[in-house]
Amino acid sequence: METVHQDYAPKGVQFFYIYKALAHPEHNGYVTPLNLKERLLHVREAERTLGSNIPWICDSMENTLKHGLGNAPNSEYLIDPDGVILKRRAWSDPDALRSDLEALLGPVVSPTKVSDLNMPTEPPPSTVAKGIVPRIQRPSDPMQAVKVTARQNDKGQPFYVKLRAEATQDLLRRGRGQLYIGFFMDPLHHVHWNNLTDPLRYQLTLPEGFHATPASGSSAKVEHPADADPREFLIDLSCPPDQRQTPFQITIDYFACDDDDTFCVPVRQVFEVSLEAGRDGGRVMRRPDNPQGSRPNRRGRGNMPSWERMLERDSNQDGKLSRSEWPAPRLDFFERMDANQDGFVDETEMSDSISRFSPPNATPNQSGNRGNAPLWFNQFDTNRDRSIDLNELEQAPDLLRALDTNRDGTVSRTEFRVWMMARPD
Image 1 (cartoon, rainbow, N blue to C red):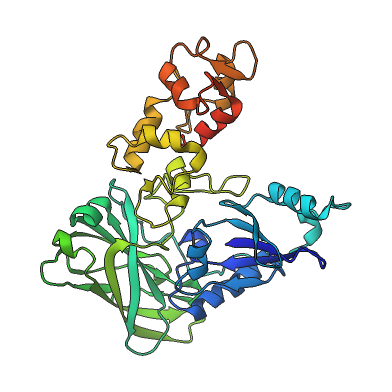
Image 2: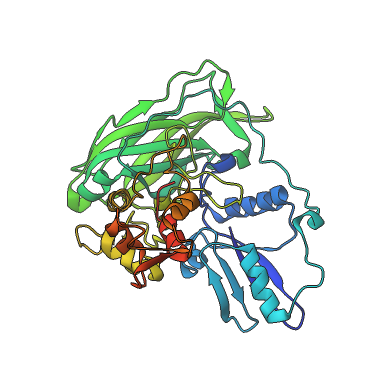
């Protein structure tokens, strides 16, 4: 979701939400829509659950606006009546926005508080039982969403089930690795699995030179009569490296019933999958097989591992960051982290760099984090001048050089905060 603000004079300010691709598929049960009609259903669902009267702009299925605005999932733009962008942020900041508007329009006499809005928020749609079918354990190799296209539904029904496909980095780069396929009931269609019939079956139809194990299969029999849990599979897949992006098909057969018990029908759906990074695939929120996934904190911003935060800038969704995608004020960090000097920083290089520049004597706390950041700063700022110099950090000169981005021989609190944003949570 994105917020755009325009038309600040003479009438005042207009606010708009922009519906783009889902940043976090599976969150609250929502899954990626396959057509504009389903996307508009999501807009109506957002209006219902948020209780806001702010109008929505719905992006095209090609996500033209998302790509034009830089691909960040929660960015914010302040635009004048002539279409000139006055302010832009990769992440929405209400306090900074209020300051911007006051600078343009003057101070606000009676600022509106959230409690003044009286928005009648609603919960996500209810479904049948969940938590019946255990989630699968995914590989340790990081996985990337790949391109999925809905191709056929033999009886003209909606695509009640949505496919999410993810590939390991080995599969994407070398043509040999694992493919995750997960089939999710779309809650907006108010349907569930009928477990009194045959379970879901899948079949891969592969081009010449592709090999999959297994190429077909079915989900386990579930004793509970109905549920809305995903049906998930891991497949060992190989293909000629020069044909990695050749599409292949996945066909599924299953029985779907609506939550009001007015119909229960057999369904066949066909999807086309290509082993290329899904530019708009989003990143799944924290789940049992992904304990390091993003999870919201008190301020509403995803308390994601730093690599997840940095990947908001991964405009081509290739799973690594180039110099042009890296934040300009932190290019010194880029040079240090690009260990193999290939012009990109990947997750391993960033993790290794952060470990190398960790504070001396820092120990993990119960949540896995390295101590308390402000306390660590104050521990070395012995003269309390709000900076750390080489004498104060003689135990870790490499760390001082890494943090001292303006090369003045000291680490300021601002430089320290910038470095903290690049640390794993």
